[in-house]
Image (cartoon, rainbow, N blue to C red; front, top):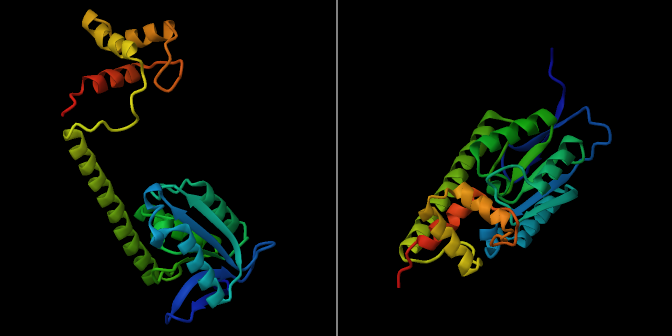
Length: 246
């Protein structure tokens, strides 16, 4: 059986730069145009090169160059790219799957995902639903084997970068701990509560028994809660016992 005809949207700057497949038989109410996705994580807020304003400007300029209408812009601010479950990305993909746009555009591929597995899944979803995927920092082509391979290679390096950042962060935190720096939220428990938690294990009480006692006496937690858990009690005890270096 012959394949249904398709319309290929070409990139005039790149030879054979197909950015996506748009099915000839449109969905009901389908709109041709771009659905933009922007993202910054907490660590990147101060990075002007990956800032929201810079991403938006790049996408608007590319839409104008391609003479494609910008139908919607979805933004995840302060959200990690480790997982695909993000409010704005979920909305963007829903629009594309419903025919409210024919191209998903990002300024950089790592704004969309840093995971090889997730990138492959998104490319397959784009192909199945009939919308294109454009990353402005790379010749991403979701309709040819070569283009899919290129996108996967770029995703490999994006994932490598994320893992390297994670390793550097862990190493830096370990050095801080060795220097006696107290990490995390400052302790807000009264000294008498901390002393009680430190004293009771010496009397043979378990973490569960200590937590039950604190709950029975309605002692608030460090964050003002009314429920103590054994793991919370243990964390307080371990933190209080950690030596602080001068």
